[in-house]
Length: 155
Image 1 (cartoon, rainbow, N blue to C red):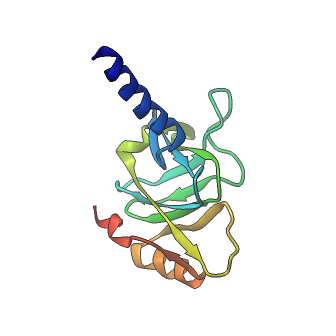
Image 2: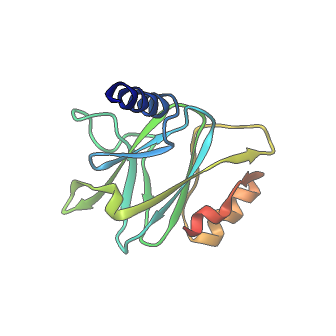
Image 3: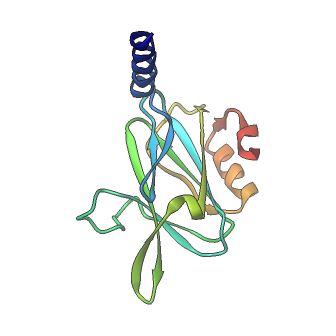
């Protein structure tokens, strides 16, 4: 019986390793995974505060790095496409000219979505930044990108 339970636990552990979840939380950061397929991550700032979203490279690196930093005002939306790999997203705000790293889960909501790029021009980067809800989707459609399963944004 114990051996059977052991094998079942090993099976589920292997499933989690092989099929990485597209969105996990690690300390104060979101970990975005596009290992199986390109994904579009729709991001909403749930607060009234202006935040900075950035790629986190580790403890000894500053939280704001060129090319990946993006400001998102309170209530606004952004979209990030990842072609493949892992992206650790940090959240911060400027307070008295100091960067304060925040717990992302308390400030933003992220929904990973599959998409179809009708231009066949898939890239990794910001697709749309700091928009209201309808402007975000207008900009995405203007780029000929079709998001699948839009109902997931309502959950």
